[in-house]
Amino acid sequence: MNKSLAPIILLGPPGAGKGTQARVLEERHGLVQLSTGDLLRAAVKQGSALGREARTYMDAGKLVPDDLIIRIIADWMQKPEAQKGFILDGFPRTQAQAKALDAMLEKKNLKLRGVIEMKVNDPALIERVCGRFTCSKCGEGYHDKFKPPKKPGVCDKCGNTQFVRRPDDNAETMKTRLEAYYAQTAPIIPYYEKRGILYHVDGMAGVEEVTKQVEEVLKRI
Ligand code: ADP
Ligand code: ADP
Ligand code: ZN
Image (cartoon, rainbow, N blue to C red; front, side, top):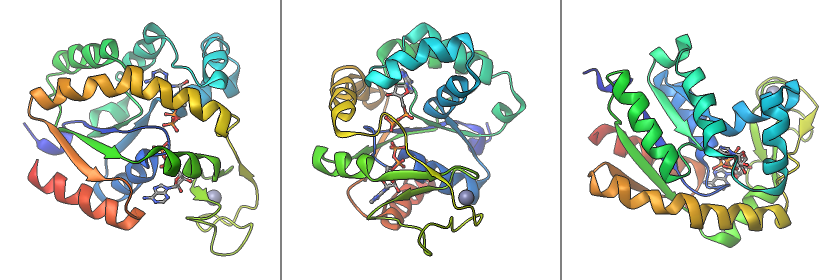
């Protein structure tokens, strides 16, 4: 099997840097980022039935029910993008999702290439999430302290001057999101460890150093 087609999972708590690294890998390796958070936010914006249902959970910082997420992923897998190698960012987040993913991949004759765990401590996660914002036009991610636009108020990538912050990126909701991560998501780590496909990078390092470590893992797998 062509290994560049085998999906990679970026696993880590909210604010760990999954989206940041996934976008670097997209640019460098022609992989496709599959972010369940982005898919859900698009559904919320559209105002679809799915978006309306998901919104109450997202605003509260709770996980959206498995059946809803699994349906979204199954739909996405039918798209042409899914024929390229993809990076899963924010999925799976529960045991049930991990099992459903295995079943979906088996049907497509695909095997997971590896799961890359990004560890970051809680104070750093809170600081990252509370300072996060994105360009409203191109979606480039920024941070008040760690990655401000080079020219204040202007997107480095597209020159746009409008930025957005997520309503759930606040200290209070972050508490619930972290609890959900440790209670529901962290328990899937041993599931991948037992299969010998779990790898680690130091998520506390700077963006470029993390990318370097991710690239080193990708060379090995
Ligand atoms: P996730 O997708 O895991 O929730 P993001 O990639 O959106 O996390 O990163 C959260 C915030 O932290 C963003 O504002 C981003 O610019 C910043 N960030 C990402 N990686 C790092 C890093 N290694 N060091 C410092 N800040 C980072
Ligand atoms: P982050 O990594 O910064 O927490 P995401 O964008 O991945 O943010 O997720 C935002 C919200 O969307 C989550 O708090 C949750 O409500 C919902 N969500 C995203 N992915 C999943 C998933 N795989 N399972 C359940 N809920 C999800
Ligand atoms: Zn932009």
